Structures are given as structure tokens and as C-alpha cells.
Length: 225
Image (tube, rainbow, N blue to C red):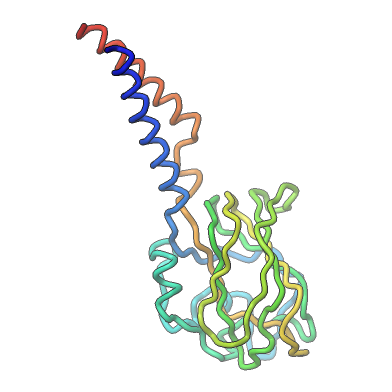
């Protein structure tokens, strides 16, 4: 009887821990970037095309509160970016490859990446690119999370499925555009993230909690017996 009781209690705790951890991984809200900490591609000053134009939602047909709306719901809702150079980021003249490093402002479970094309010359949109994540800004320890090809067909949200990782920093390596020799253009970017890592109990803490509960349950069972 005692063995059955302890097994049932342990099984319930395992289910609780599993559902808690999986819930953290699958939270899925849309998060804007806190800042760009490194840019090897410069900026095109012809139209005030600063990096902030890629992060401030200025060209989107509908805005969101960062970290609140469901990522999948928002990106599939038909939100588009304008074709205006003034609301897009353009790299320095004739710079068609390079990298940008983003700071998300905290450590998150990162699941997907979304990019909107921008600027009048849609063939300046990003074609080949890759993403790398890291917990440290110098990327001395990092994880490659995907290589992709963009699109130049429209100004809709295009979602790219990354390998899930825990990180604060993301490096976007741009390899090519669709042939516009002027520059590289991006309308807007954001990420699909779960809960903040530093707001979630460590697995070791959860295990200690589970063992404590088991100990209390065992002692209570002995008293009742």
C-alpha cells in the first residue's frame, strides 16, 4: 500500500514538472529587440534609414506590445510593412553582406524569427542569411540555430523556424540580397520567445522541491498508518 502511494505521488510530481517545463518552452509571445549592439554593415543616410527603423514598428500596418501578443496569432494576422525607405533600415551604400548583433534585453527561450521586407527596392531584401544565439555578447560560446533564404515577393511577415535555444543575444549574418546593388534593406524584425529564463525556477530547484514533497508525503503516510 505504501509503495503504491509513493509511486502515485511521484508520478503526479513528474507530470507537474514536465508540464511546467514544457509550458515555459512553448509560451510563444512576440518580442521586439531591445537594441543593436554591433553592426558591420553601416547605415544609408539618404533617407534617415537608421537601425531603429528596423525595431520600432513604425512601418507596420498594426503594432503590438512587445512580449504580450501570441507570436503565431500576430504574424498570421495579415500585418504588412510599408514599402517606404523612410520606415526601413538600409545598409551603407553597396554593402550587401555583413552581420548585426541584437540584444533582447534578457535571457529567453527563443523559438522563431520573423522578418518583414521594407523599402521601395524590394530586390534589396535579404536573401541568404543565418542566425546564431549566445548568452554572452562576445559569442565566445554560441549556438548556430539555422540558415535560411528570404523572399522578395511581398511585405508580409515571413516566419523562419529556428532551432530552439536559450539566449540573450542573436547574431544575424546576411550573405546576400536579391540583386539590388544599392544596399541591403529590412523593414522590421522580431522574435518568438518563451518566458524569461531568469524568471523560471532552475530544474535543480524543482527537483529539490519534488523530493521534499515526497518526504512529507511519506512521513504523513507513516503517521496515518
